[in-house]
Length: 287
Image (cartoon, rainbow, N blue to C red; front, side, top):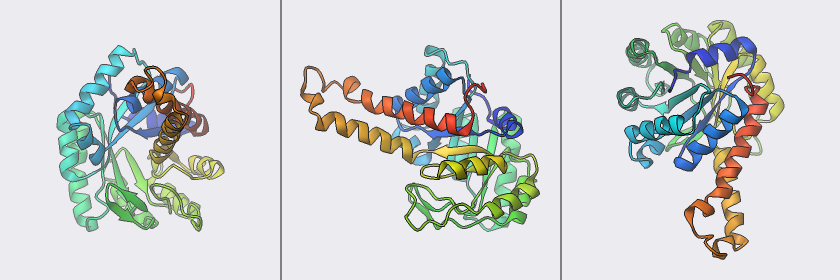
């Protein structure tokens, strides 16, 4: 059964580790992540962007697939199904469809409007026992066509949004989506410390987990980050393994063209990536 991310993240913050949010794109992705979480006894958050939701035929299809897998694969670790960078309309649609967690990204609205919309969604989520993530300061890079430069959040604005009763807060600390450029200056730990001071026990979220060096990830966790989002890294691992399978001509051997065989190395690569991340984040054995 899907759960809110509230309890797993409260435990992570207290225990100084982080729970990974791994974005899903299809059945193989979802299955690989769930099996790895179960094997490593780690809580996990499945992230769905609005674009991926559309690609998978809508939020109800996603909910049906994930719920079916939890039952059929006998998954017993805590699993949250979370809308990533949701619009106001998207958030409402996911609440309706049966997600257990949402992110409302109101960071592009004037702060007053961000506050008003966040407040309304917080009330609905509370009533339904769902968790809700809010964002302050845009996360750089590109996600579903939204491009940001990786600004740092204003700690006072963070407190303002945190005080509305959200479960977790994504604060921009110079992190970006996708691959990091060679001249990236690194994470702003001063911003993170200032945000942490203002928001206390609230779990903080680090977006753009792909390509941040391990020591920076560990420092961010020590400063209150309890949820780390990973997407690009799984995509690159999947692409590399699939490419190798085809370049090695394995799709031409016997029934190597069967999609179950063709996609197997990619799915295995996702599992390995998820395992590495769960070990780095410290969530192994915490379910």
